Length: 316
Ligand code: NAD
Ligand code: UDP
Image (cartoon, rainbow, N blue to C red; front, side, top):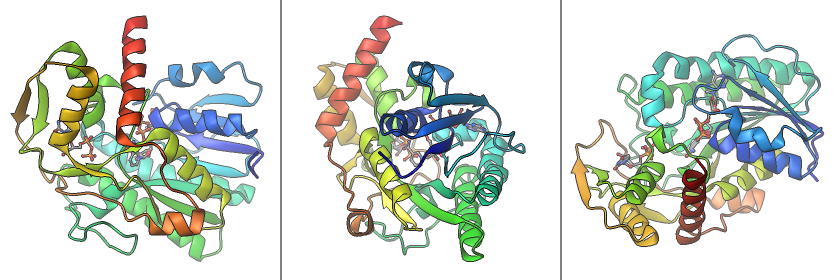
């Protein structure tokens, strides 16, 4: 049971958002899911449609919000999140982070609710500090291809901090690191669904550049537990939510080959511009302030994801 009666989850039909909606309903919190279906799909929350605790509102967060009824917490997740998606939807991404965050904050103020921003490790850019602590200010190219996402989230953090400082509402900022699991779209272009799809189809695994760049991957159930723990706490953050188990991209590809038993070859494609070379969260703050730490290791999480992808493609 959470301390909240009813949550607004923007981006609730997306990958992380749909797991968050499920977890909130499982713990007795009613959910209003607001989404425009741009990178997610109502199918992700289809199983919740029968619940009396669940409501779906088709709406673009960049536009003024319709009446969503009473809520005591707002989780703002609406934004394209994969580099392929946000580079395809650059202006929409900037608007979701700016206008969308302001619309969510204003609703929060009007209702005396708590606001949680789903920010990102991308605010650290290509980091010059490693692992990344929340005190690090980041190294972001403001006009590069990733800037539409990175700067939108940095602006969203600044807006939340300003509302919080002014005493307008209760805010929390989560800096989420690479999260994976069931319901990531094969075509969303991110490393894990791309490699998994390629491995299962027997196609070459496309490792960008040398593959020596690192990421630290967190299973979605752990990320959702971190978001809920932050919302339940009185913390403002920012708080890193991620799994500090750092791996090279090449080793992620190799683990996926092992787990799927695939004979796909690994091929190297050109490195992405401004690709962060290393990324690993310092989660001391989440451990001490929230009592949260990830529980699912990479092998277990990847195995569960492979199982979902296999069942899902068999059903399709
Ligand atoms: P996703 O693309 O699966 O989900 C995003 C959802 O937001 C989709 O359902 C999409 O339709 C919706 N959306 C996008 N723009 C919208 C708009 N203008 N109005 C209404 N709905 C809109 O991505 P995800 O991986 O689930 O990411 C969810 C959130 O978590 C994002 O804010 C993302 O920045 C953040 N995050 C995710 C990760 C990760 O690794 N998955 C890491 C860091 C931060
Ligand atoms: N990547 C890759 N091959 C792909 C997709 C991604 O090698 O087909 C690399 C990408 O260049 C980056 C890492 O995998 O170094 C993680 O990319 P992703 O898009 O998953 O997330 P990011 O952390 O960059 O937002």
